[in-house]
Amino acid sequence: MVSVPRIDSQESVFGAEDITTRRPATTTALDARLSVWGQAARAAAERRADALLGGAELYVERVGRHSEVLRLRARRPKLPLMDAELEPLINLGVEFIPEVVTRSCRLLWVDPERVRENLALRLAPELEAARSEIRRVQALYRRRARLWQADQARLDALRDEIEELRVPRCREGTPELVAKGLLIRHREDAGLARTPAASGVTHRVGPGQISRWIQQLDERIDRAPTMGLAH
Image (cartoon, rainbow, N blue to C red; front, side, top):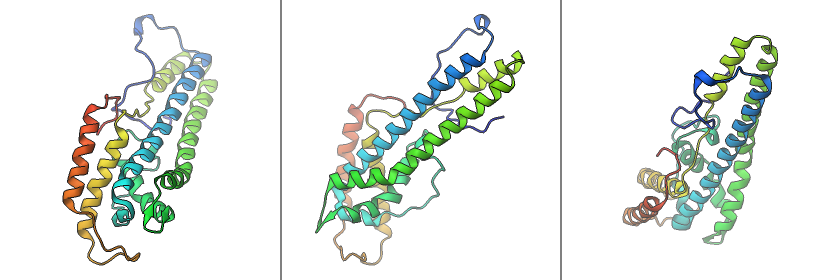
């Protein structure tokens, strides 16, 4: 069994077929299916990265330098951009945003454009890791298809495995969902802070402000059409 990322909560990129009318699998057909999956998976990873960039920008526009209170509390998945869930994106933001904000300050003001630019640089290795994993999965399946091209039963079984490959999909409101998750984490982590920050920033964003921002984001999320990302 080939080790591949499985995302059971999402739909397949392949359309449903009546099994009684299916043609025998061929190496050419399997190669084409792998190409379709690869293109969809790469696009999905890029959309998740863009969603994190947008969510981080919304978050930093509100809290500015106070993002330094964020604390990473859980080990993130190996390939967060290939995951189906929202939490890995939020954890990735928690991991990167404090450092990115520090590098994006102009005196006491945080430049949102520099935040986006610096975060994109930090996300580049994550995006490349997702692309490498996609290439690895494609290569494994193509190698098996060549080895089993004379064994029709194995080729048919391999086609079934390829059709089970999934890709995460983002909804239009995912940046707002990420920003909301970051604000919730900010509220929780700020409550744990007992000593002034090393940077000398002592003023904290109040819980009432965060609640209002979350409510505003909820209104935007409710207006966004659903496109399949669980939250």
